[in-house]
Image (cartoon, rainbow, N blue to C red; front, side, top):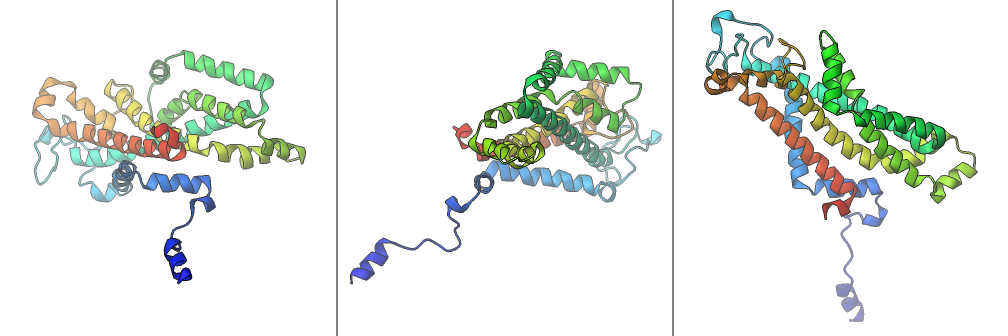
Length: 304
């Protein structure tokens, strides 16, 4: 009788549920992330645009660069699903191929910015001293100049902006913020007992950085990289809108919305610019949802 009462009072936990104590910090963060409905919705939205970008050649109905002079500013039809722009190019095909270019710019500009920022921030935070001073003075100098003005100046100097040049310009001017973040993270870890222990047993600098420092900085890196990708897409769109982005006829969402510059196109041919604007809006929102979800997952206190 006593045994039966004890069994009722102390039910055994479900076998499938893994106790939180046995999970690593990264696994706990991912568990919290998967409970964030907005973040999951953002993943599905972003995944949709990524699939469109990958299969753009199969989805598009026309050559996005080809102009049909006899079919300028045509309305939506069975031949041109979203009509044509002021140069007679098919809007739907440009929208589809524009996803490939805009997402490529956003991802690779973010990737190389993160690489530069992590390398410089790691060196500055790990070694300190004169090396830290030199890197931080360069970082401060870069941050004094307005980012957009710096990008505009470099792009204006170049006669023609290709996708590769555009990515390089953004990556080489956007790294200071992440550099300071990584440096601050490394400085906070330098005097930890496990770091001092690793030094005392003769571990190499390379091993200490990659085994002890970077794993503790992976959360801030992932969060900032995600939000940075959204920023890169907005930068490309903004520069293209004012004529400093990827030139025509290469399709990007940014240079598609330039069709709305004139009042006539704004009122009478919304198919040429509105879908691209909505694509930018949805993509940036999706990435921000993912970034906010990751931030709350890696730093639960931030959600308060």
